[in-house]
Image (cartoon, rainbow, N blue to C red):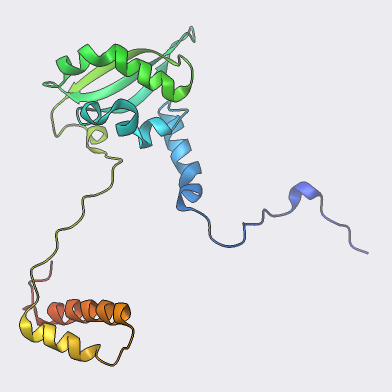
Length: 182
């Protein structure tokens, strides 16, 4: 009779069904944040909400350094030279907002690092959504008519409209001259 494996050696079962994407990438985000001293990754991912839109447009959090004494950490922000004086005046209020995110006085000091507007890669990293792409121009009338004919047999109004848009996109792309694809 074979022995049962010990309970801690059984493989981990995944949840049944779908999982949120945030749960799938959370360990990777946490390890990347912790390598820079960010115990709470929310400071990176929700910077605009924590600091405010106006301050978030001027700077990005780069790292958190802990001193040998362990009495508070130093948050380093990356900003441009022109925005540094404006941020310098707002540092006490910003420190309070960041500490509210942590839930205790984790940050004792905020240091500003100035760079050129197109400087280091850390300054170029964004955690915001990409802007929506602009809608293309109205389709050519022949393509519009062909897309209506293609979806004419569908009785459901919303499905027919979606198929017309799809056909219009496919037929418009097929009509573009060679080498003009973007």
